[in-house]
Image 1 (tube, rainbow, N blue to C red):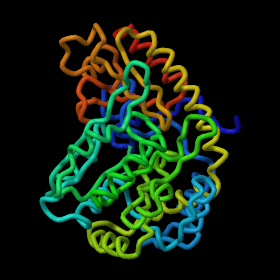
Image 2 (image 1 turned 90 degrees about the horizontal axis):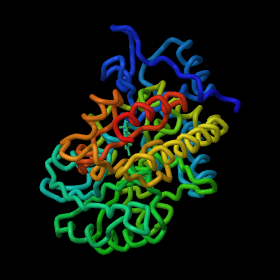
Image 3 (image 1 turned 180 degrees about the vertical axis):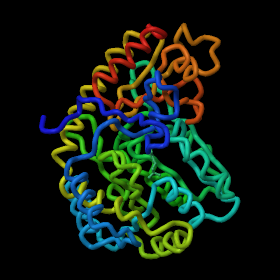
Length: 389
Ligand SMILES: Cc1ncc(COP(=O)(O)O)c(C=O)c1O
């Protein structure tokens, strides 16, 4: 390995120094596997580009340059087989703000904003925060003979009303790590077409496919006839561990949709963090070797986790096909019977901080972030043994 994914990096800093939310939220003796950032240093090329920009010393308003736009076009074509144009890109400080802005820009008060659960929690809040109607449909959990979470098209259709306008879609999916099959997506596309929905496709985890040989296919590329009603959201933040630098991109091929979205963004969002933009360009241009080694580490971590979960009676987990998040079903665990919050139980009795499934719309579950060094993951799993084994 050329890069170091094994040596733990101290992310707890003395009070009043800049620290990480992940490591500072809980007591010092807690191991945090909750919020979705990784415990790895970003690619050296990213760090060097940032150092050069910081050395310049002037941090006035930045501008998205042609070189960043070209880097993302090249990344899309190389990795997803989707040729995009520089002018389709609207760079923004974050994906979550973009979800909210899409709701404001593309729907009217009282319109339905639909999503599936379990889901990354901010998806569940967009409708209410923007004065729209929240509409949800549950995914189908793994069943006998089928290890995966599946899209339940009937449930989705049942949740749709004449007021439904917008589908917030997560592809690949946080928290299950699911990479949707072509059949599932084709069924969804048919439904989107029939109900004339606009789709926001949050593809933030697209570059972390864990099954060898698989590559991401953007929703808008799979269904070009729906591209005119699609906003695709990408960012280097998860892949290259630069979430704190706040740079994300909305890719919108249709000029009308782009103009409507851009108008909503005006005044509500700053133009961009110059360091975030610098990091994005460096990551997309020079981060590929690092990403490949990251995937080796994440695949090994996933294997350790799968082995471990198999030893915990009553605990269910479909091996994630993407990203560094795993979704654990603790409802049948004998030690969790009568326990209101398994997340709290594991925090108090194992000293491991996970994300509470209730926030994703499914109490009784927890989400575990395995984007950490193998030794830190092992330490946390050992602690979890003491409760779950
Ligand atoms: C699916 C998904 N969307 C959005 C975000 C957050 O994006 P941002 O930090 O750009 O708002 C996350 C973070 O974990 C995520 O998993």
